[in-house]
Length: 380
Image (cartoon, rainbow, N blue to C red):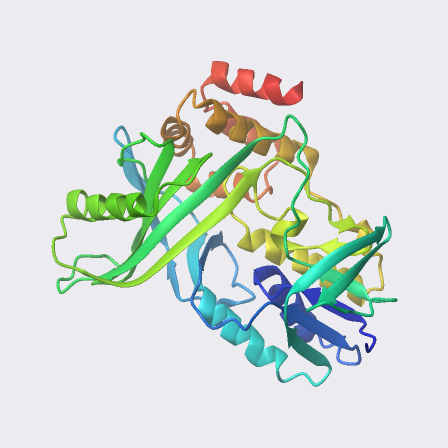
């Protein structure tokens, strides 16, 4: 097998983000690079949403963006002050096509498809196989974005963020394309913390997503029933067409995922870039990708890249513990957060960019006794 300077196992958001940033830097055109995935990306299998102040590295393919958001619950409803942030949406198929169009122009990058398998040799080496053919990883830097089955500690917390979404179209102009609903907790909470978000694409089309933070998935038809009920009761729609559907599962856990393990650098969800308390991943992938490219350009060790600060991991664990305890219930936690704080401050907090003073101000808006109990559970 030929030698490669860089090997990418997985062509999802993390692998493609890092590789396209390396190409954009112009510093790796003399390096031989291999990109491996199970199969070509040909479907719109997911949607990434994120908030951002500046222009995105992928601004060219931002499908829609909103300057105004609103929050809904049975006890609180109002527009959100997002200040200089915008809420943005990128469709999976647009992202894949954009990245592969760039990658295929690079003569030094080889793309291969097949079943990927890892075999740990020792603590410093893992062998990669494509369809049982061993890859030559000698002196290669390997980036992996395929999550391993993690051995969780006995006190690790685990929830699933699972969601079913419809893009619907109506004959009437029912939507305001300038205003999106970030969270609507008016739906029943029988299954656990549940909400809907609504992203208008134009005046008669919108993405409606039913989302839950629970330990178990629902039967397939349950998601459809909840979406039908929401569209009927809260949107007052009787006639509409479902253009597209999507379903996803995001793990929410405070289990640690190492950046470097057995000779491989883990990126994306595999490297702990999914935020434990919210499931947001896309922007953390972009931050990590930028740091990796900067270190490679300067010939700095990737081991110098710092992990998430311990206090933010602690906050995530506490919020996750609150969601697991269900006292208070998830809809109460988020309602208090958005009622007592500007959304822009919450976004900054969830981006792990706040100062300790800003963090204490947000934490103090939560119910003291349940928060203290969850904090003690995690501290112990």
